Image 1 (spheres, rainbow, N blue to C red):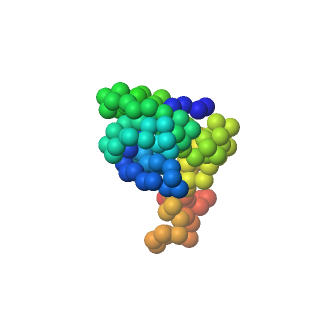
Image 2 (cartoon, rainbow, N blue to C red):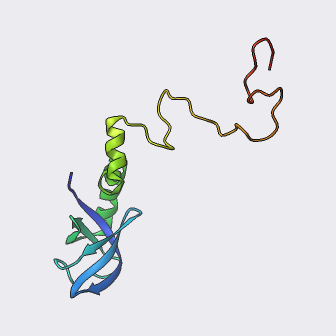
Image 3 (cartoon, rainbow, N blue to C red):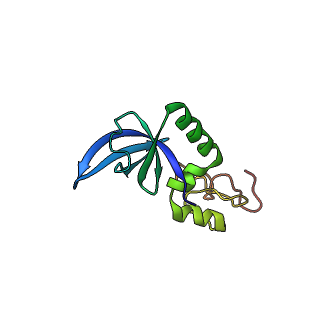
Amino acid sequence: MCLAVPGRVISLEDRDDTRMAEVDFGGVRKEVCLEYVPDVVVGEYVVVHVGFAIQRLDEESATATLDSFERLGILEEEFGDGFALAARQAGVPQAGVPQAGVPQETGQQGSGPQRGGSPQGTAQPGTSS
C-alpha cells in the first residue's frame, strides 16, 4: 500500500540542484525531495508520498495522523522491513521472534554448574529434581 505520510523536517540540503530534507516520521527518518514545496523550513511538517513532500501540514494534524497510523500499524507497514512483514503475514517463523505455541530456549544451558550431569530443570528417569 502506498500512503502519503506526515513527517517533520529535521534538516535541509541542496544536492545536485535538488532541494532535499531529512524527515522524521514518528521515529523513522528518511530522505525526502522538496522540489514540490521548496520553501519548507526545518521544524515544519510535510506530507510525503513516494519520497516527495507534496504539501505542508500543521503540527496538530500531523501528530494526530502519525498517532493513528502508529496505532493501526501503518507506520510499520510503510517503513518497516518489508520482507519481515511478508514473512509474518505468511506465518513463516523468524529468528529471534517468539512464535505462538513454540517452546523457546531459555539460554540457561551450559551456564553455571549443573547437578547430576543432566541439564538444569530436568530429572533423569528414576531420580527427583
